Length: 228
Image (tube, rainbow, N blue to C red):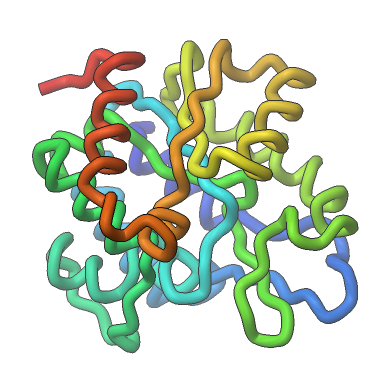
């Protein structure tokens, strides 16, 4: 199977295997056939090959981005206007998606970026509490509950064709510390490189956005050998 087929097989079987703490709900957009259809278009467009890729690991999908489109760091606006996949979803933007697609444009173009990199998250499924996004590490019990699921998902995705010399972590704080601890236990990657999280940049460092975009690209070029 090629990379796209591996991804699609993975997301079609995703489910959170244990009960989550009270008041927390799991977002699984892949249960919706229309979302799977959008994902199929996306991954067949950019990943229908056998290139190895570097993994970029986020926290968990948000309800206005990957939690609704099924495509990590891609809100319905970017999916339609930048990627070119028409969708009926409400056109509400997600800040992380805005940053990511500006960074991809600076890198080169969509084809060049996705030929080299693959976005995922510690938990490929998202969480909400009281109808608001919830990061897995913001609830101590959820953080403990998500561990086995996270490890299993990381190992399953390695089989797609992932470079293991280095992986990139979105978030220099709690997400990086959690992933580093997991990696020290599991020995999945030789090195984890932290990058400032897109939402943090857009919410608190917007005036320095170009500086952060350049920092991303410098790290990619320093630790990777991107294909043309």
